[in-house]
Length: 190
Image (cartoon, rainbow, N blue to C red; front, top):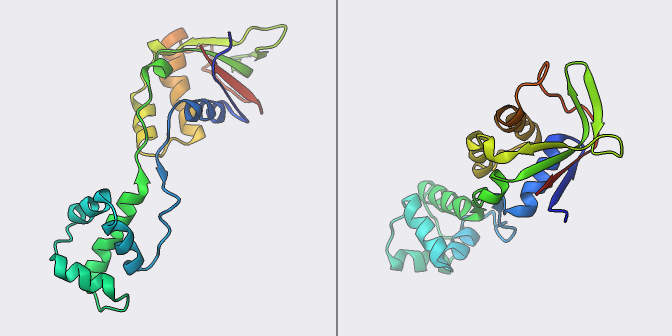
């Protein structure tokens, strides 16, 4: 039975596609598009999370002051307060990534596409060659997870860390390292 599969024009793109199908990445809420401090403050004061963000940003004003600000979009609010409102708004707009689940880190991977080690270059996952099988449980996922949680796991970084921290940990360095220099990859998680 086939498991979830990621596809992409590089190994890193296929890995990212697979991971995003399994867990929610760090992202910006599409409803947070207000530019003016007044609209941002209105949205923030409408939720407990927003009010907490204002407090965390260091905005400490009385309820009377908040009501005055909200009742007049042209109210003359000091720049330092506008900056705190903007900071709270931006912090609330970002939804943190879910951690990479154990079934992904401990999974068995089947990689299809061009794989090169030394002078041995072959297309894996075809009728003539089995996919490259990797045991993810032997890998060190710390760097990958750190980039993922920060919302900075680019395809090239994922590929580099997956090769160095997962493939090499499982099956070794290869003749002259591992290169994934094809234009189409699929990665199945089992």
